[in-house]
Image (cartoon, rainbow, N blue to C red; front, top):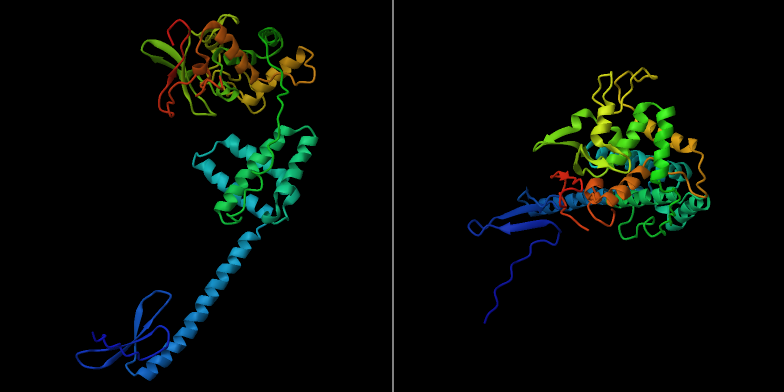
Length: 385
């Protein structure tokens, strides 16, 4: 079998093409631009067209070489970013997440606070030079000063800092996260548990020496089992009636869990119901907030909401006033009221997992995850759960 005749090759110049029209026998010249992949017509004179193609190859080749060179330099610059510069960019990313509702204000503040000492100490260091050895030494400094919690917070933040840096191209993706491979600090709980006896002493002292909204907030905390932030933001409009039953509506700030806690829920060991405390919060001052100022205090006007920090500080002051011996541990904080509430209600038969808004019994076994859509109605112990 006779092979097909090979096509005549008119040129060896790259990107230069010559075609012969089968009808007229004339030659046409084209040039392929490698930047776009498009063909462009050239003069029909082959010599002139080929010369032009060679010139274009030189010009376009130089341009493509410059583009590649700039890309390499930009990559090198991205890898040379300093710790200070990247942390500023990182916090801007976190600010955007805050504005979009992806993280909470408290989370943003904690990250900024935890990263401040890192920025101060290593601001001139290249991010790529902030390796595991350096990070470990920094964390060990906190541990030696008996601040393992701070070490844990800094480590957690740095893990996220490098994760964002990898995603942004400022740290090699083929290398492990230098903060993640450090050993997690071991934290020993040094805060004392709050007992019912001590809590009752706090209430007795607070009724004599503190403003009413303070001890009322302590009582609402133990009756509802909610966190400080959720106690502080409680308002009268949170009282809802569902199927003839009145509830206190709580949307937990930390988790977004939605709870409906019946107002007639009573903690027998304390002797109050939620309704009792809400009734005490109604006074001569008109205010939407359960815990509000009744007279001018600094910039706060009558009816203004009491800051949550004032509630926690008030509880700390009451605990200190009892002058109890806590040994090597710290005195219980406002948050310990939540733990005491869980223990006391469990004795009473209340579903404490529902009351605290936990998804898993391991933290308060399992009930259906509402995915933030459904309300959890807390049982008082009289109903079947």
